[in-house]
Amino acid sequence: MKFVFVLCLLVSSLAFSQADHLLLTEICDTPTGGEFVEICNPTSSAVSLSLVYITDLYGDNSCVEDFYPQIAVGPIAYQSSYDFLVKFPTGDEIAPGQVIVIAMSGSAFEVEYGIQADYDIWGTGGGATVMTVPSNGFAGSSAGLTNSGETVTLFSYDDYADSADLCYDIDYAVWGDDAGEFVDKTGITINSSTYLNDLPWASQDAIYHTGHASDSTFQRIDTWEGFETPTGGNGITGHDETSENLSDTWFQSDPTPGTVYTALERETWGSIKSTF
Image (tube, rainbow, N blue to C red; front, side, top):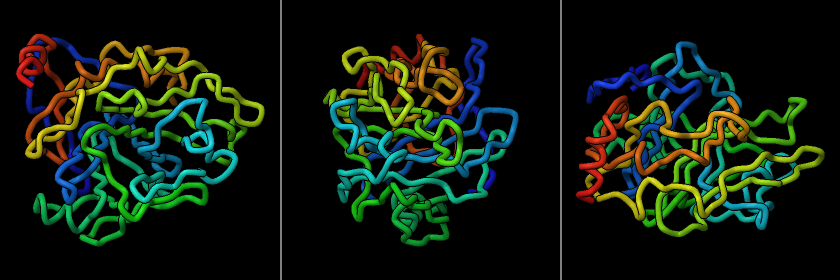
């Protein structure tokens, strides 16, 4: 699956601009053996993955010690066997247009889809590269994506940088009705640095109110991130990644690990969404 490039499966009459950073493009939360997260590089340049992390931890300023901003000052206090905070191996990169797949279990993924994942979290083999567990991160023995509601956050953190107090969001996706699954770093202070405002939980949008069907996945259909606020946020390029209207920019479809949808008219998605 190495160096698989973006496939336009649907073409819109609208002109879509591309995001200026890596994107989450497909998420599978069921079946358990088939769980994966797909990432695409929509930019025209290769992007280093050496400082890129992925986690399913969520929270706000009421639970900082259990929340991913905590890695700047020490280990995560709450290390559930069902959760993870891992990073890509140092030196890895993603080419322009490349799509990569992170499986929970590389061997189970290969059984489910008949292809090899690029990375895996459990380290079960299947030819996938094992994600790195950083000193302040962890990978639970049963790490995975909860069907009823979950968060996936892709972020960057450099513990040697001048701004080493803060993590910078790259992309963020959430599903489920439980507001407790959302991320809000507003006002969290780490050492001498304070996070900017994220969108309040009550105002954030979710892909869908529960998980996807067992024969489907969640897939991004909008590489310009909808009406996401482009400035004043905690994103790696200044976006407020928590402000994306996810129910419009993602939908359910047949699994396509290794390729991504790149365009779909809102009117078309509206008619599809109404059938769920």
